Length: 166
Image (tube, rainbow, N blue to C red; front, side, top):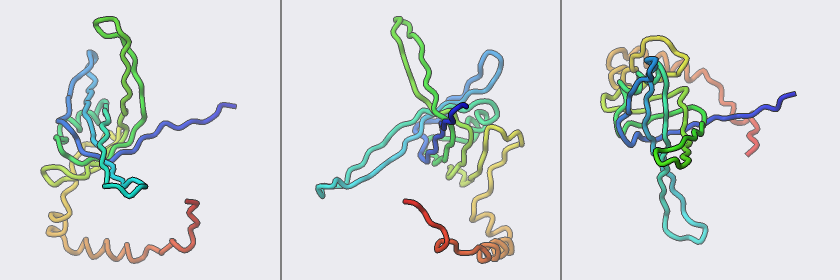
């Protein structure tokens, strides 16, 4: 019997540079960019608040790569799902090189300069159109906001029934 394993990454961060769009020799789109995630903490000895940024290399393929190249810009906030992959190669001097990157399988644009946000995954072949911002949607159809709030009020509060083990 084979043992199961899991390789899953979920990040929310900001793009540190504009995406780099290119194509393989057989015309498959590849887009790479970097995301910065920030973390803050206060030391246990009561010292001053500390802050650190981590940088993650992201690679998207095919349709998802084309969407990234078209819609993403430096500074955009993005939710990324994917898997870790480590590549090894020899550089021009013959030295071994190694990099670990996140192969993106799904993303949600949390903000962009145009105010649009939307979700996209690598398995989605539909044409992508960013969702309108909330301000524009509310102004366009106020009755829709009422219908959504009615649905939300129907959701039960399960916080008392669920036993969370942490």
